[in-house]
Length: 419
Image 1 (tube, rainbow, N blue to C red):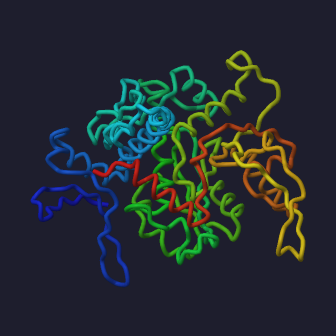
Image 2: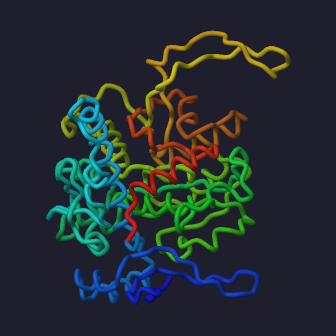
Image 3: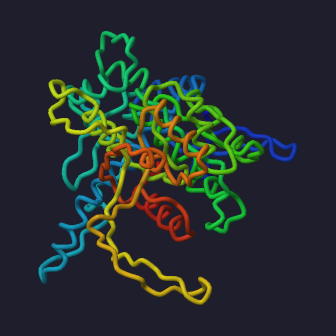
């Protein structure tokens, strides 16, 4: 990747992050990220271009952190204000506020505190400059005591703390590796290319997903399991990032997951679907924290420990009434067999978090027994293991149908900063 400064007809200079790829024997220059007007960026940091070039040479995912954090901040603000705004306009004297009053003024960053946590007042977007997070430490909403819990469970036994303490270690090394199976073709999407390579703004779905994972300070490496003859990955910006590792996947999702797990190094690992680009950084934090608390001894944990959990997954409650079908006419039509109690039904999301060794053994056992493994939790469930459910955002949906892609594009268009 490289930095380019372009001057359009307006005469203003704008900063872009680009990369060169060879397509059919010709070099093509692809825009990866847009940073905004040069004078505005230099006013915030006179060394902006120098630092940006250093990040490019280092293959750092921090190049994208500002916009990703800004999107999550704007999403949180929009959700927080949606109900109160709707209530206000429902009254006779109510009036619909302009978009800027609902979201706050969109910025390409949020205000970091001294501990690195993001801060924003209700109904108001943060007033940080667009590059506030580009060269800052990765933010987290967790307190020091909670970070200590994560360190106690996920850090290597021989981990040496730097002078900056636990937070400094996490920011430098992360805690867990993430496997992203991406060898599928996504047939139900009906596109000419696999759904993970469909474009969302300047980047494809897979780029959005992996970059979001890398933005979490708790993630070290992301292992992407691809089809051996994948012709698209080389055109993504992920090729230039040091913490993205490519491995060959298999014919089924579970085969790709197992191949990815073999390339991980952390004692605990997460597995995340390539087609879930809207994963929340807060949900990743909470999954790690709540699973960690099930692993601590009673004297170390603020929660009582009853039964051992092997890990946990993100879930979302069922909103619709769920019907179980009874097939008729050879399966072409279906009649209702019965209505299920949705109070006990949850949608399984990702990431799913488990001990590396235990998860690999469970998957290998399931494959040996020729059992269907639909997700990582199912491999452990069949062995009688107890899996924690952690409620996450319903917006962490999987892109399966064209309507899912349309909704994701709408969210990005409405909430992502356009610098």
